[in-house]
Image 1 (spheres, rainbow, N blue to C red):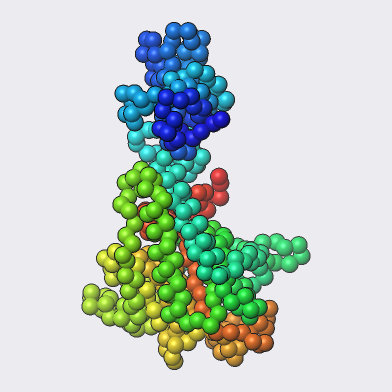
Image 2 (spheres, helix red, strand yellow):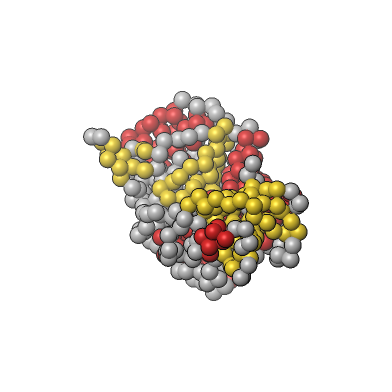
Length: 425
Ligand code: ATP
């Protein structure tokens, strides 16, 4: 029975069957070494020429990255990892063409466009694989957190008739004789679930944004982890967010030691404080740094860089001006709202809020943002017949992975990124 290469160490002096990709083949006059790689690691297979002349010659000419399967004796040896497999039987399952469009074991990495163009080969590199093993831990631990805390997982529609925020960042879809859009956020639906009495919901799903700009932190399709809870304030869901991030960090720390080592990244810090800074305090911090910024102005990338760039930990920016937040955010007072963002350094990774629950406030807010409440009637109606107070947030899975692994470009934390110019592979 096939075992993973990473398990060979537990089978020393026994026969093992392993399969994978040939990273490298070295020959001496009488012996041949095959470096075989699978999802769990690499090991060296050894074949003596004597008695295996034909196979020896075939393997000598076998291109890198061909797929094969071997059985043999696992033995302690001089090999770097301390053991190897003495090949008894070997099957070539698929021969790779040459030359490879992208080297897998080359020390020097190709440019990102070439790598993305040949992403399946790029992902064979243990560093790239490690990013996505860690991302899997992050999303699973968060999903488990929600399930264990009594949240209901929902799947809201991704083809929608109205924009969440009436923005222009929408991809139109032809929906038979109607016009529809790809969903930019499950916002309206998760709120409707509060009126439906679901109490606590979460969703992990793609969100589509037709943003034209090409930046290292935006992609046009990302994975949004959304939650919404009833009978809770903005402060309450910030507490939950803190616990969610800590849970993900702990899970990675506990399960991905090998991947962190491959990536050369220290174990995630489990002692972050999650300071809560109001928007107005943030403006003062900017002013103290000599930036001319008025209370009420949006925080530009440049401001976030200058003020937040040095804060190498998580912090919330709370009580944003109502003007700068969408219509569904609950007012705090005349000027400020119960909307918040979670930042790490200069990067925003979550935005959330206590939401409006009064239908009158909602309709006023829609109008004051220049939106027509009638085009949101499916949503507004759910407020008229008993909408509880509620709050929630959305965190970008790719951005959280960037922060945890200190990766600068979101394309590296996305399997097959969709950006301004890329829709394949
Ligand atoms: P930004 O200001 O960075 O463009 P946003 O304010 O549009 O983000 P929200 O609509 O509040 O973001 O989305 C919530 C979260 O979803 C963000 O904090 C981020 O983690 C993630 N997110 C939003 N847009 C993108 C995107 N284009 N690419 C990747 N992640 C995104």
